[in-house]
Image (cartoon, rainbow, N blue to C red):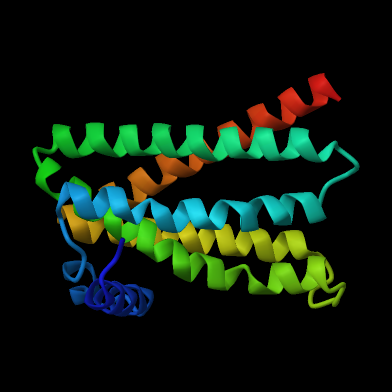
Length: 188
């Protein structure tokens, strides 16, 4: 699992990235082992993401929601990482790829913190916003902004290329979401 020092160092890195501090990315290991272990963080968060979709559901059977969203998350991740790997290989910067994975996976903790208002709104029936969808869109855009920053800084590329990579990943995510919605409509 993770050592106490590794957790402390990576959490500090997440906080520094949140403040757009370049040294935050240097805290993450560039080893393959660290990258693989870091997948435990987003995997542990999948049930919380699915819970949001369940609370927001429109009467779709629970099992179908869980299966569709789990498959969507996994496929989006595989396609996104494949795209970033191809970009890093094309730029001859694949030595930074595992640091990118580790940083993104650990940064999902910050993304989870941004979802707290959504959990409060949906789970506790507290009306924080007129339309929670506006906040969800804002939160998604903030996630893609940080993804562009992480990409730019880890691979040491111009910000335009980092932003383009984040937009590509956003396109993959939105396409998978649309495909899942169409599949759900066909099944239900």
